[in-house]
Image (cartoon, rainbow, N blue to C red; front, side):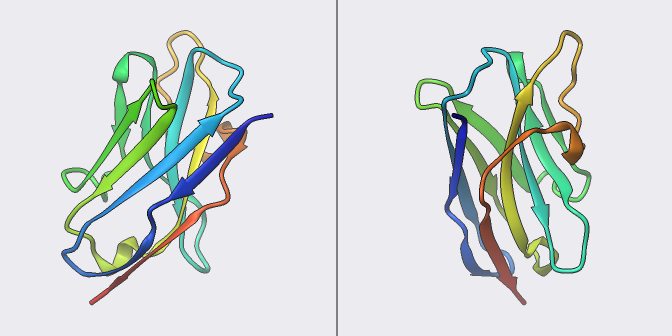
Length: 126
């Protein structure tokens, strides 16, 4: 059974930093896309960052230069380092995973991911 468990959310002031973690277990694929998504109240879920086999990373334009996705394969853990946070970054953040096909660039499209964590709340005050 696949489990993705996020942690590290919290409340910070604008300009602050947070580091989210996602511990993965039971994952059936050796080649996969791992991603971070977020959903603010009243808004659709949107992609934040993804990483695939070979370490290829994709970022949403809104977080480029501020957020960094990384993974520790030995610990089966995905991270999202968030710096210079803005009130607009306030949302529930979700870790997600799916199998990565050949030539797959791990797009930030929520419906393409079939494994999800329960989410961790990030609140940024001005």
